[in-house]
Image (cartoon, rainbow, N blue to C red; front, side, top):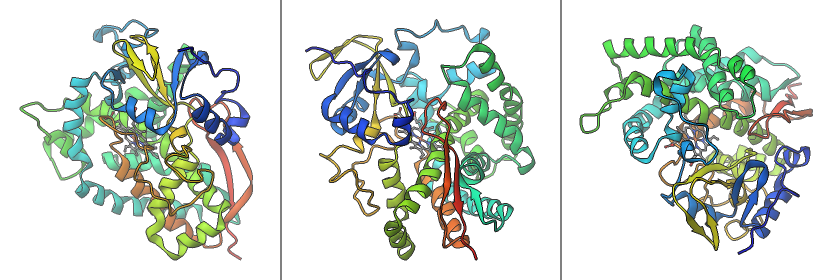
Length: 408
Ligand code: HEM
């Protein structure tokens, strides 16, 4: 089968795509179920059914080292602290190690710990809104969306309040350090806070080893599977993975949820009258305003035939999950934002062995934030300033999104 390329119209870094990706996503999924995107040296897979097929195919791995262009893997003794973290990151492990680590990590995301977290988020969010006070307008993107997700993870890990800045630098390093577009100097600068963050984490782990409680870190320490336990490095890498996966994604969810609701006042009114619709609004925002510029990366561990195309061993496949949300076979009238939709088939949090481990956590922090926002500012409206970070490496990030509080 002849291979089509999409470089002539697909440019996820362009302003057009960042402002409104829907036309491009529709074109991709209706005309290009499987194509090549030379800019990324990758195959693109689009549409709900094709993406699920790939997510469940064990021959398509998350192990970056399988990639035909991956740099040669360093010996562990030659790795810096950041590289060691990445080497143990849940996302990139081979199948066997991934399964072991995920099994040991899961109890730390139990309903009991998630309930504890909801109570802590409530306090965190109230404190944040107290700091904001009652201005006429504020930058929601910078003052809420950028802050709550990392604080939520800090609080999950049990970082004391006065150490949040150290944790912030660790988060910054983990999230920015993986950007492949950085020069060596930029990367060095991005990850400079990692060693101090790791010292802090190791101190906390050692402290919990001596005095275990019923919190997240203690649960990781006590987790055991057939005699196997997590090492300090594996726990730090898990926190790194949680930061990498759970801060940027949640930042965009917070911003786009509020932006989209304020742009659809009928839907916002429905939500205010029936709070049980909050989770539907979150799912719908992830579908309608999917914020990623890239997809989920997979690497072929052997030659694979995919809908008549031959994917060679070592090639990269990018699963463009945002196209699944626009798939008319799954969602009727996909251009309509409708918080009452059925999201049973949603793959916004993935599917299969790498399904998002933080889904309950992010749903709960977002719900707490949303309720507190409209409790404080019941007449909130969108301000007239939105500024995108066009250079963000993987998200349609808004740096500025002002809101009017309309208190008087
Ligand atoms: C809106 C917010 C979020 C979205 C849209 C999201 C989405 C996803 C998706 C699509 C995957 C699967 C990746 C793949 O198959 O390659 C994933 C995995 C993961 N997520 Fe999330 N996520 C979010 C928030 C979070 C949060 C808050 C945490 C942690 C507290 C988290 C932790 C993880 C981890 C550790 C994995 C890797 C799981 C594994 O490899 O076994 N995520 N997430």
